[in-house]
Image (cartoon, rainbow, N blue to C red; front, side, top):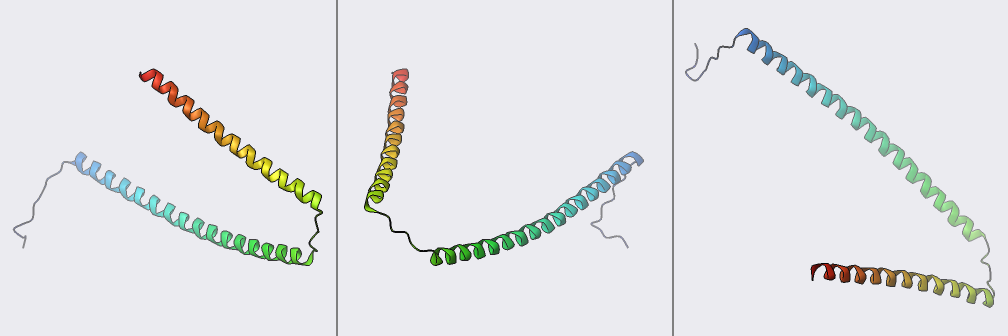
Length: 119
């Protein structure tokens, strides 16, 4: 016994064929997406496994380096060489300061040019 709310739609042959093709192509597309998602999951698991293996190797390498550093004697640097090292550090700081000043100068110059163009 048909219900009172059911609706019947009549389709001609070409419309039904087109609808069936569209439905099948949609199913095919969905299956391809599911297949790619599964392949992606496999690749992500492999990536996770390789990363954890890499992190383990890095950790053991760090411990080996630390053990080697503890085994090696600490060199005593003469005062003359310490002063030269301090000079190199201050030279690096000066170079960095000059670079920052150069950037500030360039910013001011660009702002001045913009004001000239606007005014």
